[in-house]
Image (tube, rainbow, N blue to C red):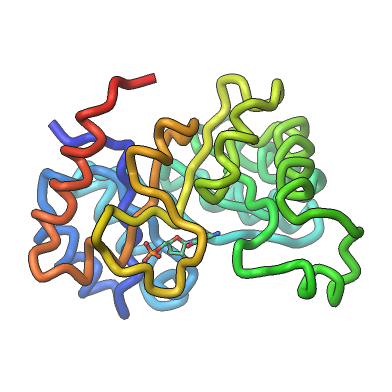
Length: 234
Ligand code: C5P
């Protein structure tokens, strides 16, 4: 049986290739993340096909941000598709509106805290308050969880700090930036292995290139699953 702690990011060029990759991965992968790049070109149709015809779980990585009314309407529209996870920016008004929009459906709202591509200099340029980036991430995570987020997206380095928050009890932590030992980092800078990310408190890990760019994607996914299986579930 496949293990839904592994979420494969389907960051391939188009929906057809996404479907082909999911078919190649077969039963070994049960959870897919579909991002903005794909969503602007048939990604929602792919999400529905993977869900309805292949029984996969789906994480839509849309990172929504807008006035509350617009976020709520957008989420209300998406909630009818029976998908599993959706990202929004972690600003409390956005999180509250998104939760409102789910109208009781089982679509989990995950908050993005501070994009991992941003450093202190970028935050200064955006007039974000001074302070250590990691501390701001944890502070934003706490606020998003207080606003009702079902979970947060966090780098593996932040997972343990967020897991320690009282607000994070029974909430999800989903970590990208995961690299099985011996695979290329790509543009990821702060990475952890699958086992470390889960041990540090992540419920799900998101892995893209090390799987879909592998010569044998199915074996690459199975190697990650074997690594996870060597851990006891928490
Ligand atoms: O290919 P790779 O394993 O680096 O893919 C990671 C996925 O997680 C990509 O879809 C990327 O956009 C996403 N992501 C990330 N870092 C974040 C948030 C999302 O790498 N902080």
